[in-house]
Amino acid sequence: MVVYLALTSYRHCPTRCEYPCISCVDLSAIVAVFPWHTSMDFDYFGILFQVVFWIVAMTFMMRWFARSRLRDRPASEARTLRQPTPLLIVGIVCLAMSIGMLYGSYTETGGPIPFVVGCAMTVLSLYLISDYYLARHVIDDDGMAYGRTLGKRGYFRWSDVRRVAFNKRMNWYRLELESGVMVRVTGMQMGLPEFAAHVLRHVPAARIDPRAHDLLEHAARGKLHRIWP
Image (cartoon, rainbow, N blue to C red; front, side, top):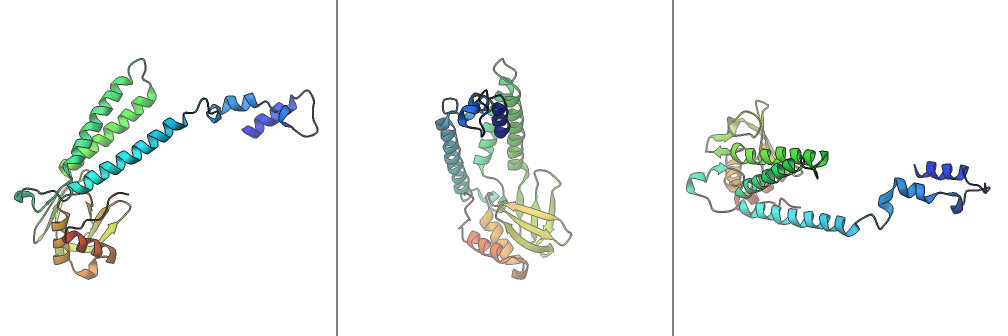
């Protein structure tokens, strides 16, 4: 685009230099197409502040989630894996913000962008709230009853586990069953030490990946892996 505008300006140059020079190029046409390249129109400090703010906010939030995994719970929940309460709080706050954004999109200052962002935040917040209530697992000496945010609940015996692995990028333990079903246990849930102890006790070590085995051994001692960064 810039080369095209420069050549167009050169064709209309009254001096018709042998080679295009800076006087032949209409810089105003280029600036009009790319106005953000002017320091007066681009708020560098505002963009930098937003980036730094979100990095700091995400760091504090993820550390809040990480500390919540080892909080004391009632004896009745000792063998229950569930998301920490801060996740529910974040989901409710995001839902309130998304509702406000959707309402604002219908005002004079609104528009399609606030509407799209509001819809995306609504879907995300509803998923977080549903994940808190539905994605719960209950373990015992025979197996584990697992829940899913999207999909059917089920139950498997420890002897049905064919392979145990850990996905660092997605931050979850992956249990592959003999039936082909795959059960995922996220690394953000409460109750991971009890889960790790049962897996190490009832699943043969040959069926556990080395990396997952190390993480499970640490988790069984109450030393959970980092979830951020």
